Image 1 (cartoon, rainbow, N blue to C red):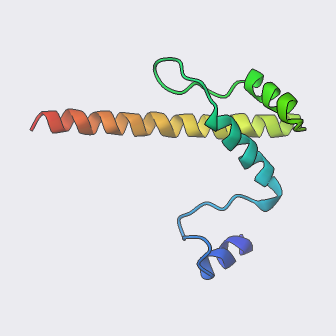
Image 2: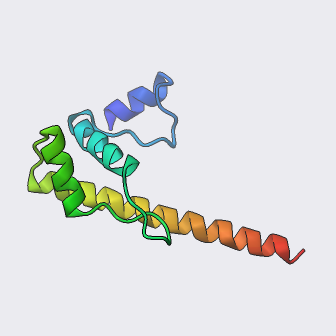
Length: 100
């Protein structure tokens, strides 16, 4: 928390901007790499699967612990939920605009 306050005080982070812990930066990088190549199922983005993570690790020679894999899947779950909320808000706004 002190690092976060220091980043805000120096202007390196905005007060509402999340700061990813440096020691876990590799998780964010792995998640972002996997997010960039995620598939789609015709209704939107597909969740990152264990198969996707396994392939990523084998191709790039990345070593992840079971905890790391669970964390990446949890991060993806949050991302997928945020996308659903955003899509619902966009659809609602478009529907309301059409009623005017």
